[in-house]
Length: 107
Image 1 (tube, one colour):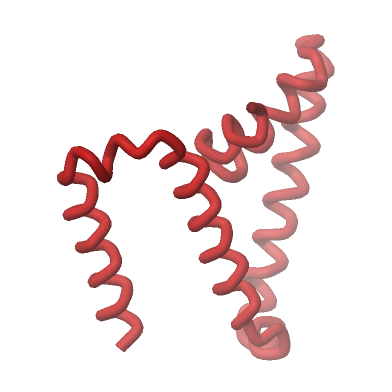
Image 2: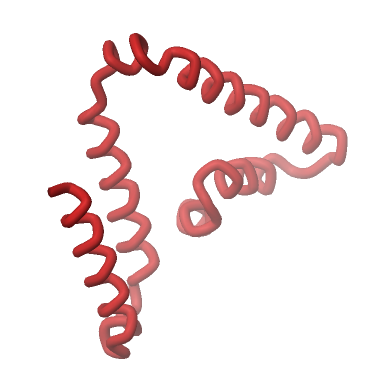
């Protein structure tokens, strides 16, 4: 059932991207970013932490360490290259979440 919902929404999005007036709505990028973040938050709130720790502890540990190591290396390289903090934060967000969210948070 959930696969059908995801495929249906994806199909509707592809059809919507073909329709020119719908595609040219001025604030479409912030609305899309907002919808993606809402989806991520809602998917995250349905997570069962006990089951994740029980069955996916290794994956959770690996993901956590990957993010921490990425952030430390990222900021160290920016310090070495003497890049200003605004650019550093924007590039860090762009690398973690994608350029759409970074540009939206920067504007």
